[in-house]
Image (tube, rainbow, N blue to C red; front, side, top):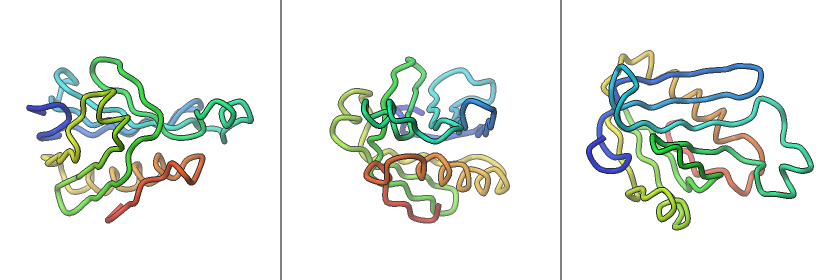
Length: 135
C-alpha cells in the first residue's frame, strides 16, 4: 500500500476465535509492510460497550493505531475494495479518503473477504454501519 491504506492487497486473513472476528488486509504475503485489521467482538456489545461508544467494529493499522467505527462506505467490485471514511477516522489514522485497495488474491479469497466484511460491519450499533455495496 504505497500511500496510507491505498494500494494492493496480496494477502487476506479471516480469524474467527472465541474473543473476536478479524479480517486482515496485508500489503505483503509475510505480513510485513502496511496492513489493516477490521474486527468486531465475538459476543454482542455489553451495556458498558454501548455507554462508552465501543459497540461497533474497530480498525487497527500497522502503527497499532485503533479507531472504533468511522467507515461510511465500503464497496467491493470485482477485485477492487473502496473504503470511505468519516473525517475523524481519516484524520486520526491519516487515511486517504476514499481508499482504493486492489485485491491481488485468488477469487475465493475475495468472496471470503465480502462475507467477513459483512460480518464485521454489521456488528453492534446500526448507526455506525457503513453503506455496503457488493458486500
